[in-house]
Length: 203
Image (cartoon, rainbow, N blue to C red; front, side):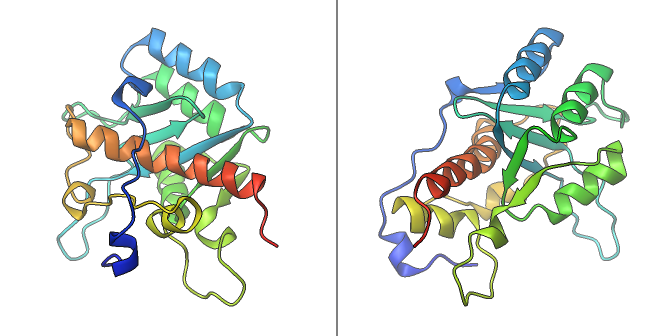
């Protein structure tokens, strides 16, 4: 969907910095992520999957799971090594613990496919989820609300959503800096929008 002219005129949304993004690769980083996420009341949540282009081709995603606290975004690569489609036990434990916890609220945009793919690929039954795409709709609005429109509406800023990055290969063992920032922002901005919405309830 092309941005509205009024959205294009808005100042850019800065987004989360690389220093505040952890691409979880080691047991120590996984332990750090679990400790931080387990104590959060709410986390931003999203996934990325390698796009499919052939007719009838089934997605093998998700290939990346993003979970964000107020200060840090944690990215978990799933089956990144060629020919391997099983998460290391330590990563699976972190994701299952956080996503299935009824005590931790998960917030994101357009989560239907994400939840189905997590269930199908990893057997994770995500609990306590709010899909902001429908929750933040104004009375009378029929269309779901995307992150880009939400950032414009709530923050008066323009969230960059490049289709070139969206349709990149998320199954690559080594993700680019642009992919990392894009994916982290998707989860982190959802949490920021949720916090703002709760602090400033609509009339």
